[in-house]
Each structure stands twice: as structure tokens, then as C-alpha cells.
Length: 280
Image 1 (cartoon, rainbow, N blue to C red):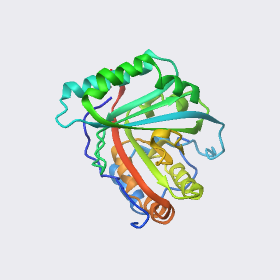
Image 2 (tube, helix red, strand yellow):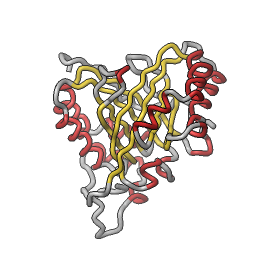
Image 3 (cartoon, one colour):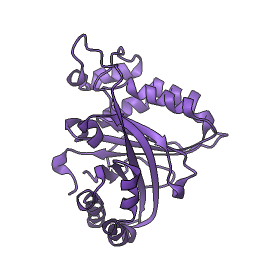
């Protein structure tokens, strides 16, 4: 897992109320800036195209999973060796305890107002696995000996979501998940926000050439209860992330649906490299 920062277009927001996947889709190619830029940089859409006549928009069975996000503020002057030690031990949690079915982590690429420097994502089969994880002696030892000495703050968020009920989607395995960009949105929404989040969810499904998987849900971690919802996306590449975040469709959803009901949002992204260069 890469721990090197990548140069990406920031997709960072900190707002208050006063300021303002399917490997392919049957939907026609999106128009405007996104389509043109996609052609320019030759995103590998043909690799993910469905056979002619196949309706990939048919609803597929879903499986509930539990997602865990940790954002870390590393100490100033953190050395490469210290960073590697921290991320190595966090990554090996999946081999030392049961319940973790997927993990990714890395150095945050974009500047963010809260100065978070690293992000960790884990997926569990159910809430019981997550509860055991928090109290697992190995994990507690990793935090005590290999994370806390290098960091001065951590934020945790947990949410239940749904993914396609197949092994590759559930375990985030296969070529599609070997590399790309992870995008995290932790948001505090005002009142009922189902319409806003549903609009965002529908939008992500219209960009299978850019987004491998997108999940979202209510944050049930009491330590960060002011952040009510979590959105987590895996993009195919830094270019795909740039196209989506700068597209008129995403900006329209943000402006018309999300911004009016958001008090605060923490937005970070980090790169994931091929398995051969992962932190192990």
C-alpha cells in the first residue's frame, strides 16, 4: 500500500450552513467536460464494457457489510521509518485477528482544514466483528506502541452499508481493487438527508468507468456522533477521481442537494498502489 503522496486535484470542503459501480452501465456516456476529458486521457472504459445486449442495470442481490474509517493526525516531522512502522502494523491487523475482510490505508493526498495526514479503511462482516476488533489485544497494542507515539489525534467513524453479493465486491478483491484512489466524506447533515444522499448514490452508479465501488451510511460511532453520515468511494485512478470531482454533475448534486443540509464535512483522499508495492 502506497504511503507516498500523489498530486491530485483537491476535493476538500469545510462548510457550515451559512456558507454555502456494476462494471458498466447501460446509461449513455455522460456529457460535457467529463466525457471529453475521459476521451483525452483514454480511461480504460472498453475494458469494463458489458457485452452488447446485456442489461447490466438489473438490480443485483446485496449484502450488508460494516465499514470502519480512521483518520490520523501524524506528528510534525514524522520520519519515513516511523510512518512505515505505523502503517505496516495497522495493515497486518487483518492477519492477526478475525472479522476484517478488507483493508486499505495510506497517506492522505489532499490538504484538508483539519490537517489529517493518514487514513485507514477496514471492512467487517457484521457489527459484532467490529466490536471485537476495538477490544482486541493485538489492535490495542498496535495503537499503543505503533500509532500513538507518532500521532496526536485520531478520528473513528463506523457505518453499515450494502454491496453486491459476490466475493470480489464484498472482499474488494480482483484487478479493479489493486490500485486506485479512495475518497472519504465524513459529513454532518441537518435534518432529513435521504434525498441528498440518494441523489449522490444514484450519480455514482452512472459512472462505472470511473468508480469501482461506492458505499454510504449512518455513522454509529459515538465518539464522532456529530458527523452523521459517511460516504466512501474507490476510484479507478487519480484521473478518474479528478474527472468525477470536477464534473458538472457532481458539482450540481453538491450545490443543490448536499450543501443546503450540511453543517460540516471532512473530505480526504489517498492512493492505493498495486499489490506488489503494498505495505506489508
